Image (cartoon, rainbow, N blue to C red; front, side, top):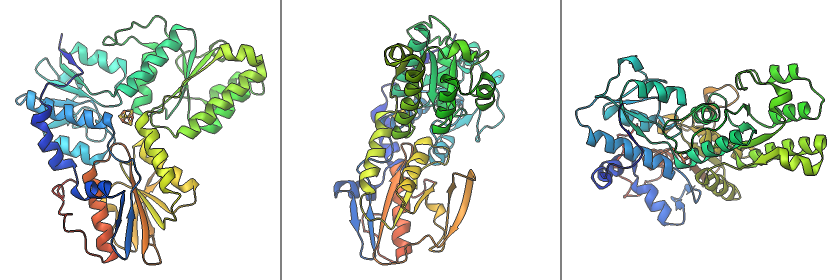
Length: 417
Ligand code: SF4
């Protein structure tokens, strides 16, 4: 059987200079040190007090670099994207990592792997079935799963043990949600606590799903309507009459905190309506599992949105849930907000390319540049966006505004793409 490791190889100091060279930004550091603001005449830049790489993503990047150094001759693989940021994944490809799944997959399959191969697991974890397959090949596993994700795993296993069905507020296809749900109904050989009982689960994507589930609980909808609505979002063999008697609510760590609270309240009220306050308290368990980094970034953005911004850019991978939610949060405040992956999206003052959440693809927007001068522009970033990517965007904004960038802004990471 291969090895399994979750901790540093003790090479942190050795990889730190390389990580900083590629992912840090002197310009972003400068703005952080100057109250998150930079005034350049025709362009006034504002950053939220919390943005960019979280501790979980930093740890994943560091472990991936340490693994490269520790196994210089080995074939290195990732099961899928290590975090949801294209620049980070391309950087790991440049270090020699190959991908077994997802958009960077090169066709290698698990059956091709053997004991000399090293497989790194991503920050959001992997499903237990995949873990078993990898273990079966005897590969050496390096696990970068974030501790905040593992706290949710612990929670859903407690729900299973106590006979509660896990209701998770999240995206059914998201790797983190799939990994979490697999801990409710499958054993994880590397978790210290055994799974005492297999739990049922259901995924609530948002408020409308929560209301649909509430209609079933209070008897307004029948099981067929529920099954149709939650097709693909129910555990195998889900029996609404039995499995919804007691529930435990959790959420993907990167959801909008406010929406998660609304989902909890809608469901709690439905159980109160059906069973009364006292019995509902025994049948519904609540846990807010939005991670601290996601919460901090949402709170900081809310504070920034109190300023009269002409424009907000949110920088991050299009498949990054926490980045998408930051852009969503800004739009609810009526701000012109665009979710971009990086500097390449800012074509010129006429055209910007950004994520269209409704169409689920990148789309051009014309006339995005603010009409008046000086322009007050906010730049936020999701938890998987390196400072170097943010710095590149800031420099491009200065260029488009026709103002001189600060002399310190010779970005050592300009090659990160
Ligand atoms: S966003 Fe939260 S859960 Fe995800 S890696 Fe960062 S700290 Fe961990």
